[in-house]
Image (tube, rainbow, N blue to C red; front, top):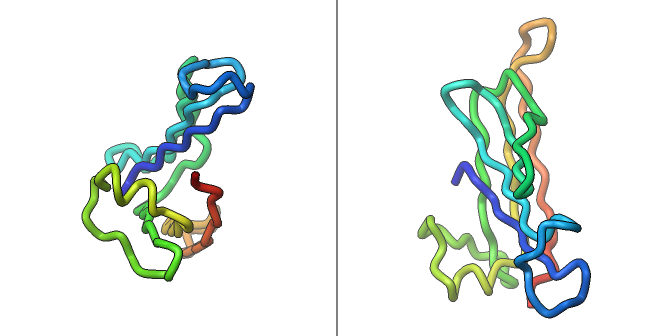
Length: 107
């Protein structure tokens, strides 16, 4: 629920093991530091700080939540949407909450 890994065959060579271009990218929330980190096989980069919580929710084509995390191989193949929820504080210390649902092209 606190990490999302995306894979794509960006160079068209039939696999997702290459690192240039970045064919496997992981976004992970570190609750201890309050940071959302993006790792691409070369380096990890903090992309957001000051977070209280990050949640990834996975949905199938019918909109049903795939709740058994970590997802099984069958459930991973069924993911069509990922909902990302970010809870944190603004620069002025006010609570903020952002939620976005992202459609995936999953084959």
